[in-house]
Amino acid sequence: MFSQKVEYALRAVIYLAFEGEPRTIDRVAEVTHVPGPYLAKLVQEMVRLGLLRSQRGVGGGIALVKSPAELTLLEVVNAVDPIPRIRSCPLGIPSHGVRLCPLHAKLDKAAAEIEAAFASTTLADLLAEPNPSIPLCHGPADRE
Image (cartoon, rainbow, N blue to C red; front, side):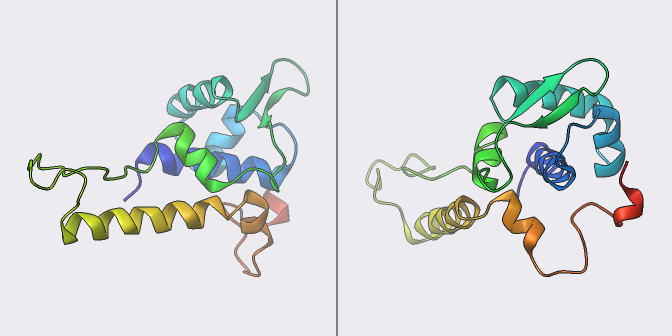
């Protein structure tokens, strides 16, 4: 349902939210199982879009621009690959126009529900969920 780009971006920002401090692209790639070269390009894009900041040198790395409590899943998704919505008949049937048929109306409603769920979920919400599995992490021993 979601592109690989969205999956990789979410993995990266969730890991950075979990760590709370800048991490190298190599470390993020290793922990999140995202290919390093692909992650480097994606990070560059997320820096340009204002989701991440990057700092070179000792103590540098990549980090979130906003706090995990302020950054929603929808902001990340919309930045890298927005959820497609159906605004008019995708088949181009003139009589349908913006009046969607039942199938396309249902598909668009589902997309709207996903958007609403992601808009109301922050990275901090995910990390605070009472679940024994910490997102993308084996536990404290795996932290740098």
